Length: 469
Image (cartoon, rainbow, N blue to C red; front, side):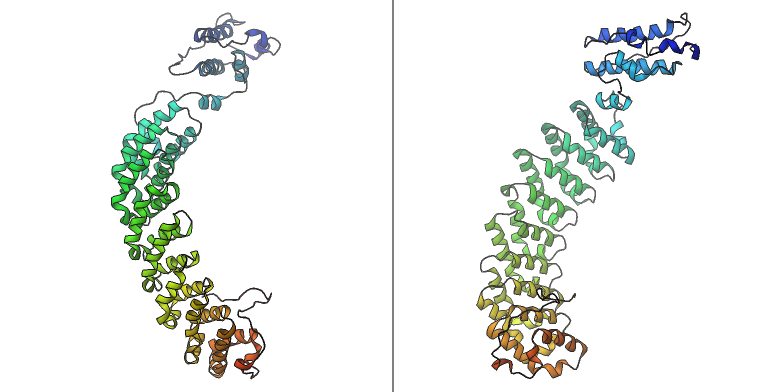
């Protein structure tokens, strides 16, 4: 047995001469150097008394560099376990021709192919949180052979894995690293169940990743054919609607025409749905659609403006259309709503739409149609003291100019006594008077020659001040 008295045997003075660096040769030469090291260690100054058990090495599927490192690791580990604790593993590997003597077990594992595994081993790990993370890390630097081995092992259960709490993350990682041919096999396997996977809270992430990674026109066409029959239900689903948005973002327009057609034919239903309105806003507002299609969809939204303006979700779609400022579209919205402007101004959702519409109106005739109903003295007090309409009135004053502004201020001046009878009236009146002091000094607004500019100023004097609703 080895003891401390024999430690000089392994001193640095003779270590470099123990074995010359192994050339990049055949497997036989590497194995013989390994056996030489073990034989030398067991016989030198031991009288042949010590023996080190030989562990057979399997080189199936390994390249020459991996074989060399396996031999080095085996020799160093067996020397250590046999009592040669002072025998450095790094130098052992250097003697056997490894370029980096500091290589360790972690480097060996990352640089060698996956050993033979039992069927279903990767699948079991994929359903476990720690195992799933381990496989994801392994896929980051794995060889194509390793990726293929993992892919083949989990392919039979890929649908269930995409919906699994932990497995969906491995499925997403695998989609990034597999070859185009393997991705085609994966698409064929999941397409029969693609809509049910997309509706699952975990599966939707996997399907979104698959939408991002499919690359060939044939794969996209097959994907499109599987989604088309269920497009409307996918648009209205809180999980699957994200898949539809991902299709709009990553696929060319001719492959997303089926989504556009569905939204046009079911515009009202989609716009008034919590999930559908998000898809419509992305399609209209993110410049991911051809201009002529976006305008066609905007025209369809205008047709339903009276219903959408008071809807908790539809009003957002209408505001998106307004903010895009399509030619003549905002003027059409004014024409549609002009006969009930005051009533709609006193409702929560429509008051937001009105403020947006006033800010994006530029044609003088359209501005006149929008502002004039709010200048009637018979309704000024009611509108200024309403919890929602008062914000619309502030925007009206901000937008109006010239004769329209004079008419608006004259109507407010007539109602000052009535406004001072309520807290809400006094509050809004103080804001207006701070901008237009002539309202409270008895000057007749209609005959006052002083120029006026609409808008409420904050203390810095350059930005409008609006309260929170």
